[in-house]
Length: 469
Image: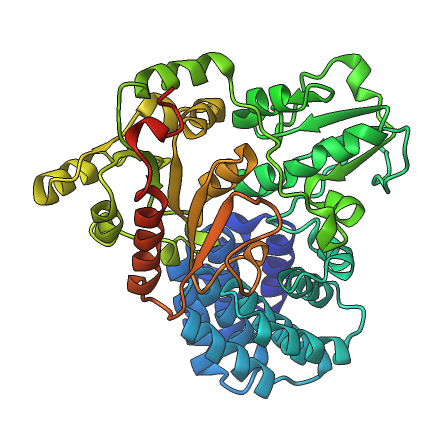
């Protein structure tokens, strides 16, 4: 039996989770209380995206072996992925308490730090990181977590250096097109810059592309296909391909001849090492034809045109805490008589219709602008609005990149990019941050947004809005 479990472990680590799971469940059919088999099966379920099932397996492991740290550590990780934050924190602390040696204790501290980073509690995360580094000064996961903490408190030079350790993880893929080295900023090179993470991250980091293009012989930008048109127009001196993540690249032969490559986020370590190195200036150029269409459409509307987005993210990026309802946003709608435009990236027509019937607030969804696979469509719409009010989501970065005024609601469990305090961020001078002060309570920041919206348009006559010319 033990031999079979060791084989199952190896198969799981090699990515053959289906075979591994079959072996583990055969053993569990004979002995459902075998903690080792439960461990293996739970791991396979986690890798297969079946987090609730994985949770139950690891929970059972901690019941069978409450004094072993591995079970608590696995439970902490899965509950973190499920955003069951209180249980994850408790499991991590139990893993620290029951750690058999420094190796397991270090892993538990790393896990606790990662949890705190996910929820934006950087003041708690950094001490946890330091505990891990006392046990293992070279632990790359701890150093990566330290990087997030340093970036959050705007220690840019050290932060980018340690942020590099997260490259090669599930959320920051390491890409190499051949045997080329990672670019170190040396001028005169032919460099491939590849996108990473979500659309918002890629848009934000793209603010550094002009810096690279200025010193390189040539920059080839490998981005999300939805951003290709917008980026190619915005960075005319760069060759842009929308091939990010694709196995087969349709690049010209000339562009495959590169000297180095770099993840787009790592450009920060070259170009954004001080607060003064962030200009905050717009860098995206919307499509002139599509912009003209929106300008023409909006020209006869003699009131502010305000874009809204009330949800953001996906499950593993904390969508659970980046979610409002239109009812929550009512104070904003009541602040000013406006043309309200949905910037949701998923179909919200039913929710909008029900809210209109209930509250009489008219919100327009333009699916050909927001539900398309070409972000150029969304950019042209946003460029012709007077204001954007949104949850922490990609459209906030789009507005910032376009230089469009934006009020972004950031949850208490916010990303490092939004820092730890203040109402501004160095990436964009046009974006104002409105922070959630009390967990799970949005009343105060929504009323703050409503006050700002009312103040923004209180002294503006209809003819003074952005597109009424």
